[in-house]
Length: 555
Image (cartoon, rainbow, N blue to C red; front, side, top):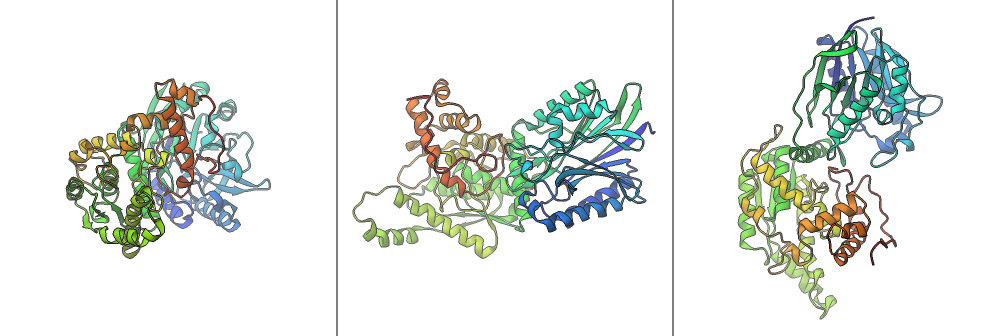
């Protein structure tokens, strides 16, 4: 039995379904571990398949190939001098399992199964996997090691069971997506387990964007006594090596790197940029295109795109009509020049006027309303999709959570696009991020520092500019009011009476509830975007489109 361990955490960015690519990443990490004379190398949860593979798990061929890849990597530990902790899909006589293999000297020496299968929010593992029994420790290098898998540590039974059966150190692989305060919540959870069991825990998380989820990495380790001894990077891959020794009080880290976590202001920007970067790259695109209107939302999306991809990969178009103000034309060009992106102007006057002329016999003498206004938005969407198709770039849409919440967005118009970086950001948050980005340059940014979102865009009243002198507040309450009401309804699921008790007008609250409900069909057809809050539109929030329920807590 050894009294010293060198442990490496491979905080990597897999792609769901890319067995060959993920296996190549794992092989590189195994070679790095061998070169660093590592004793134990651990990968994140379900690394070779990527987390989470969804209904790919219903494909027997995919599962068979994933298991074969895991066996292949286990065999490559022969001569490496490294004990491998490899989370993987596995199949036994009971059924499909979320598992972890322990391999050394070319052989699989132990298999453990996830006991607690999450079935809430964005997680629905019970759809695919069978739960394993309470696991026993695995002996690695003569040391009893507990390997709880992700959700297993959210319930005390698994770690208690492992500690009572002699586990001296816990290695926990995870696929834990980011949202607000998640990094703090994970640490509090691990602190509780360590305090209960008196055993140090190394928490490894994957990194990268996968559809609507963003995994932030930020792997760490905590010792008894509430000592943070290891902290990996956030929102980027990392290979974290630490040295551990056994003393009279158990195992402790004698050499561990501690990185600074991003601030609460920086984290959502980094998450949105990472989600965008990976969505573009993992889906085979190299460039993006978006409409740059001179408003705050499109300016922030353009800045995020430049940070994610670089200015040469971002193409902005201004699509003016007669209601587009001179200030918006100036502000859009100013923003594009600051970001150093390609900028084109494509006027939509002739196609809009032509459509209105041809529709006049159908519309008759009915008063002008949103039907005519939305033609502008839909023709802009058509033109942007045409550019996307012709140039092979991904069209980004720019609606924020406030607008998406109340349906203040035109389906098949400004909602057109393949990805929306602002989907889970309220309008007030968009303004706050613009201010933050103007003062800071993120470490992984491919853009430049300074005021990339012009002050004039931040200061002016928001407007869709679909009619003369229009502002958003013609149709909506001030955004601080709207955002608070929506946050209460969407993120907290509060009763309307409790929202009114916060000081909001009852009639307004009832109106916002109605707008939220009737816009559900639009949200079903909206582009995906990164989940940045605990309760986002899209994955994890499943409301019926046809919905007769109305909150009866107020009249």
